Length: 185
Picture 1: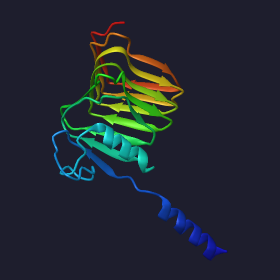
Picture 2 (picture 1 turned 60 degrees about the horizontal axis):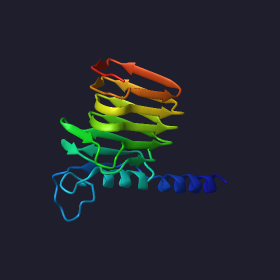
Picture 3 (picture 1 turned 90 degrees about the horizontal axis):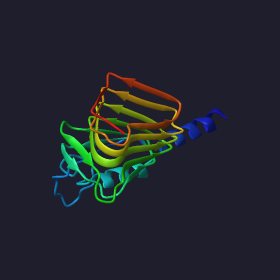
Picture 4 (picture 1 turned 90 degrees about the vertical axis):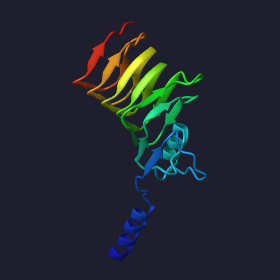
């Protein structure tokens, strides 16, 4: 019985995928572009999000500095952390009314400037955390959260937003050391 239990535990451990780092750099031109290093980074954010959604682990998407313009909303369905280097800006492309749709998972955004769009992050039944992020020039809502147990903002800046900052129908909302400048609805 103990031997059988040990084999079952070993089998479970072998089936668990480990978290990986996924790299995005809009300036990389490589023939492989598999996102496994800076030299073979994905050139667009959509490929990195698709990769993170596909492997079932809590991945860390590292984004090189620069401006990224997704053409469509990026849906995140697996837990992950998105960290931008200094100077990382994500703007809405022509058909991306919402930059990120987060569905039933936990996502942590670090050091990202969200600029120009209708809405930046829509969460549904998800834990949303933002550290050192800037939200500027939204025309609808910066963050919309439905049934999210946790929405946390640390050291964030909200500036020049025109459609309201939050619509949060959720559990715990915590805002720490953040600034709100020149917003109106």
